[in-house]
Image (cartoon, rainbow over the protein chains, first blue to last red):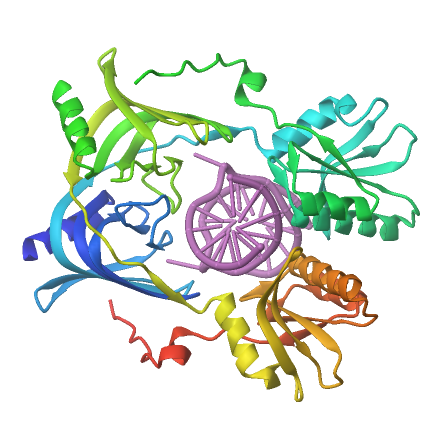
Length: 243
Length: 243
DNA sequence: GGGGAGAGATGCCGC
DNA sequence: GCGGCATTTCTCCCC
């Protein structure tokens, strides 16, 4: 048992990344409060003192401490306890380890940043560079325009030279997207003292209620699909594997 | 190398939870597209065929496949490759492992569900049971009322018997919260054919812009803090550890 | 399964 | 730091 404590402390001192497979219970106090009774989990301690607890199923971690936690391992009643705290965020997480199955620690070095494409921003850029996606004669003016009431994806003039605001959504546009568009249109109207401003929602899909609300406000929807990595960088079509 | 393939296949067949510390690169194609060049990471394969890739720092995974992925490990050019796919979601992730540092596999069993308190729902319940938090004479009628245009946290009549809608936010209320409240108020007005409906935003804090917008619409803000676990179950104040 | 909304959201960017 | 907002959001709940 003391052997494990030593290995954990060594790992922490060396800024290694530690993985413990164990049976444990977890309590958390902070922005909310949680309790997780006994079960088998993975506990991961990263080199920046992030602590993550994963159950054996599911995508998301069940408990975690954000980077910069203070970690204090000790033994009490023959159980290994990991007490963690983040004084800035006022977060506290305690892990009581009843059984320890495996422990690995590695010095991991990673200077790479992930590159992501096919985002909403890419979609706005696509519309900006291809204004005919909105309508023939659409003249884009700005991208990601910052206002106090939120930032506007695409700003421009329509074929009749009416000021238009375009809000992009990568997937299904919902009620919130219509709310957002409406807020921008109203703010631009009042701040610029203009009577008519067009609101346009661009997305590949829109929910029934959202479309109804959109129509109630006199806004319109255009069917646009966000660009893929392939379209942007000419990557070859992925070949499907056969099982 | 073939030894590792065998251990991975065994782990998959036994529905164990597998952790690999390695140097790898990752590509993802699906709802978005991403590329992550070489670096040291943890690759986790869970018993439900969730696959998660973690860099040595940061809270969130850098890449992942949701539960139910098909996983195909093989060797190409002396590199270990993990090809994963989710045909339903049309997600594809490939991990090319250049160096493998550690590999552990454990049969993990966990039937526990996490219990969380201090949520927005707890806050709505608190207001429902303590209507004087809104104002003397407030009469709550329903909680979490479902409508086609969203669900209303607390519904009731104010001291003057005017219909009132309360939207709760656990922390800082923002522009979106005002949008939401406005949407509910307008929908209730039109569906019930009522002239006057009060909109009340309950939160411990509210942003300046949100407050301004709230006032513009004639809505009001009340200062309410969500209940903590302690208040609900009488748990003792956590003692701070000393380092 | 679709729709709507909270989340210990997280993370990013801009002011 | 706050504010506004997208996210491979995730997760839950209800219809």
